[in-house]
Length: 295
Length: 331
Image (cartoon, rainbow over all chains, first blue to last red; front, side, top):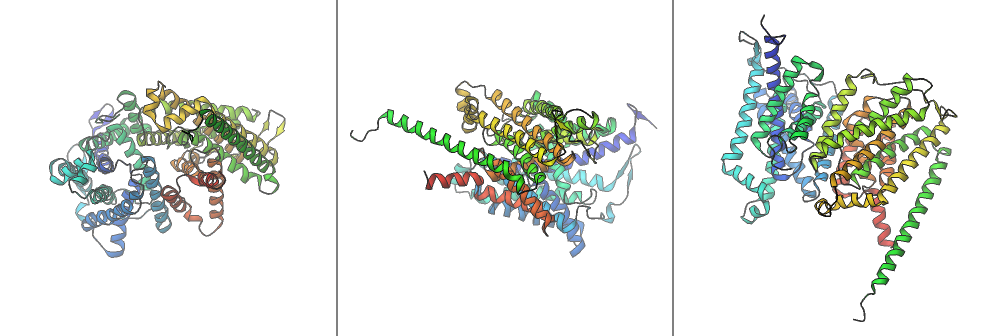
């Protein structure tokens, strides 16, 4: 078997694939955070909990109502998106304009509530979810084995990321959003319903998280605590990329997934720490982040 | 012009105000002290010690959030590094006197704080919070993988030992007064800092950072010093906690702990000296009461709900509300 730097090629590509998948999740989550940050200027600490809610909803919808995976890919994000809109409308709106520290603490409290309630209802051991039959198995590419579902996750995550980028950068709705990011008061003056835009934006960012959760359900163990660790990693990703640009969030997310995968191949003990170490280096060398504009 | 005010009168009124504030604080401190000295007569000392350790932790944290305006989401790292260092030293070197173990724990946390500060200071606001959280997760992984922490099991059976080789700390009452003395030292230290010219600059940074910069203050240096002091005191709290409970575990390093100390400070009242103490007592007591009752599994959700309620309608915290009430009704 051929080797690269003392590692079998199949292992290397296998880890790269896993890295790409994780990167897809990081990209989806940091994209959602960036969209919300752009307009609301807040960091959603409940993002991890809402990602978890998306995964839990996918499993629960199947178990109780028999809703298929395909339908859940739409239904779960919409349901969780509604939760997001409710959080924005009933809670975040009440403290709009105050120090951003408060919105951060508020969403942290919301995350604790969501996680605590679901832990009580479903325990911490996790729920089982089997993927649709279409995705069982995989194909042999000669140098590695590619499970269908993993290929699907990478493709769909990239598509959704690209679609979001396209919507924000190239469409009229996206133009509203960008204008709101620049000066929401002026927008209001032009007769655009800014509060509605804010609610929808928050809901959309949350939907991205829930969609990532639904995608994750068949491959990761679905537990009420699955969101808290990945959220902290995504925070590091966001710090590395800077939240200035949509494409920056996507690229950094995927890049960090790959870096993590490579570390897992060549020096496994550091794999869970590597993204945080990259963050430290970036902060020391280029404090505003790879794609950041603000200080 | 008859009702113009004489500047000298204003100055005199301000001095009188300061004097009465000063006297009020002194009386409050003395009452608090008397209560704490007498407390073990009516309450279980170990429970009181838990409150005091967390109170010191929250007081340390408040120096940053309340008086410098920096939100650290990684203070668990300092609590845990103090706890593990002290625990490891006291277990490994039997005969090491307890205070040396505690000092070592405090020093390690202080150095770690310097490391955090140098990195996190490069960004502001919510980024600062995210960076400290990420760094503390890095520290968490370090503790998980290191052998000296005992991994998932943690350190158990850490000897309490003797203070200065004289006072046996295995006696709960001796231990209590030792913890009380350390807590008071930490509390008075922070009170002194807040009242000093250095503390005034910290408050200026909190209120208006650009203006503090334009006045010629090296803002980053002040922030770093405040962060390092806060981290050191948090480490001291962790070291004390380890000696009291004779264990150190990953719970201390978890992000959940960073959240808890924020809640204690916020609930008690940020930017007040007594607030974090009240908040710590409240949260520790609440957790205890809940764990005894049918709601034991709901602690996290309830803490989350308190977080939300405090932010929405109670931002000045318990002590802040009391102060407002006093000002309005007593003057």
